[in-house]
Image (cartoon, rainbow, N blue to C red):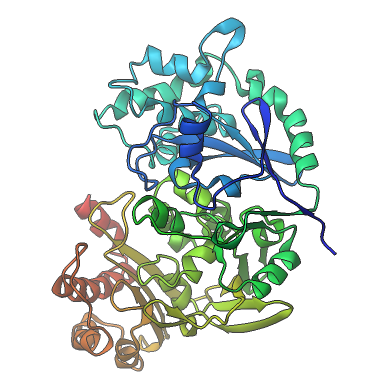
Amino acid sequence: MVEITNAIRFLLNGEEVTLTDVAPDLTLLDWLRLERRLRGSKEGCAEGDCGACTVLVGKLMGEDVVYDSVTACIRFVGSLHGTHVVTIEHLRGENGALHPVQQAMVDHHGSQCGFCTPGFVMSLYGLWMREPNPSRAAIETALQGNLCRCTGYAPIIRAGQSISEHGQPQGDPLWAERIAVKDKIKAIRDGRRVEIGSGENRIFIPANLDDFAAIYEANPDARIVAGSTDVGLWVTKFMRSIGPVIFIGHLEELKRIAENDSELRLYAGVTYSEARPAIEANFPQLGELWNRFAGEQVRNMGTIGGNIANGSPIGDTPPPFIALGAKLHLRQGEHRREIKLEDYFLAYGKQDRRPGEFVESVTIPLLPAGERFATYKISKRREEDISALCGAFRVFVNDAGMVGMARIAFGGMAATPKRAKAVEAALVGKPWTMETIEAVLTAFGEDFQPISDMRASAEYRLLTAQNLLKRFWLETQGQGERLKREVA
């Protein structure tokens, strides 16, 4: 029998916090600014896009405390149990001096109006702790989720390159405090379930994966929240009630990544950032797409399972995973079942998930030798934007130059992520030539009747989907680099 406690406990900068009365929709940003008067973190967009509210959240990974940059505006306080929250007010140098990140920003004039500066500093801080001498590319990636209203990126990047001139991570207080922080986090994560509130204001923080399965089976109407990159906007933009809530982002059993010679298995709680090394090692074709999932802070929070489970027609992982033949593993209490990922999406807002059942993991077969595979994301903005459409293409062409297999899947073209089965059927058995590609383009109209919305018109979506098939063919003919240069 799992023991139950009625307090959320975490570390905030240099102190331990205990909360027994927390609303499910209380954001970290509101709590910091309104309750703790820590106002260095700013509210810019309230949707995780601008990075003005960036803080670091340290979590226990094995025997180490790992700090991720996150957006406090869409991170809920209920998800912080057993973590270490670090805000800009905690930064300090030796003998009362500025912290090395802050000093670098001063020296290179990285702060202009100053509104976004705390967020930039915290993102650079998190990067510097991992990479004391980061490349320009690493700095740009770390700052993808930070927007400067004054367009001052060049001096900020120069500041990022010079931080270690002012000090090394080994001299940073967080580095020195890690052992003590680790011990405190271990003491907080004592194997007990947390329950707070009642009715719609009830919060559950399961002790482990089996406890989560039992709680959700008994409370199938509860909202599961892992990274809150989607649900957070329900609160900040639509003022929706989300309780009762089960927070699961801390469950180590859902952080597992397993691979063998034939497949990669990602458990539902793995974040985009955590999944990236395994994805790039096994599916290098997805590297560029992965880098275009929102900004670094959102990639540090958003989970593989959440991107699939919510059933969004514009989620970016389902199209490539469907094209690769992924299988979904679902769990309800002690019962588990497996289905094809493409069969999980039934209709808009409707998935093949029974009451009390949750996504436990997804298994992705590795690409067989000789097959071609690519995924393309189309959006109004290259960085930090939701897809207008996302297309994944996979074919096998035999030695005679004939298409032996084709799997094509799209997001943003229908009410759910969906395969282009008519296009696939039109390709199989035909020569892999531009003549064949031109001949099958009309089949897209059999597979999809896209809608027009703020991201793209129906006509644009259909024409772009057709053109992406042409692009895929051209790239299989070795013309990919030329195309990229022309686009650039």
